[in-house]
Amino acid sequence: MTSDVYELIEQNIQDVIWIRSADGAYEYVSPSVYPLLGYQPCELMGTSIWNIVHPQDTECLDDAISEVQGGKDIGLFTCRVRHKNGRYLWFENRCKVIHSEGDECGRILGVARDITHRKRMEDQLLSAERIAHVGSWEWDVLQDTLSWSAEMYRIFGFDDEAPISVSRFLSHVHPSDKSRVIQSIRRVNMGDTYSVEYRILRPSGELRYVHAQGKSSMKGTRFAPCSAPFKILRSTNASRKRLERVRTT
Image (cartoon, rainbow, N blue to C red):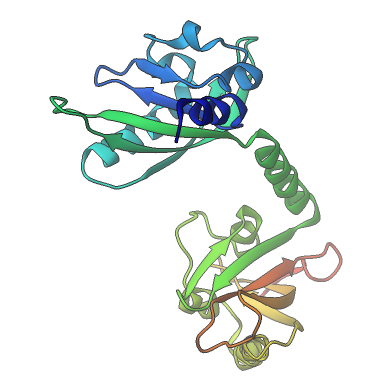
């Protein structure tokens, strides 16, 4: 590409491109930093990358840089970055090591994307879940991995937010309801939706009634549960009158 094309891309890209030198200072910052963070690139050149990262997020930055310096292809981290007016914005960063002749340590090339609006929407969703006692989770069937919202952990009474497996989830379903829950999940595997009420046993021994609704989503134009990846999306609702009612077994 010609220099004119590079300049056109540089002037119009919405993400911030940055290069960190071996000593931790900004060696390059794209002009897109100004509309996003209020700094002219020259104001950041030569300064430490840690200067504008929120103190509570520097560990994430250190870990990502250490990973790529240790051989990982791409490092990914999310952090808050201080705007020139003092407020903090959320940025998602991807970084990798770039080497040039005579450069043993390597510099770090990063691309930062403003995700402040997305984080705000996520926080509002979490607040709504806490107020309504509604949790949500996703099940990647092919990978057999579950992703739970924070409210799901509270509904089930788990103190930690360790990864959840399907077997761990089913181990807390009341034995009399387990087969019905499994049948509902199988219906979703066939492309159907489901709505089911069942009981869960919390670690404390308490019994809780929940209502779950689910549907499947898939990639591609055909539904092929055996070969095409898709996820089960499910919400667990512990309502005030009935579903949040706690009874002792």
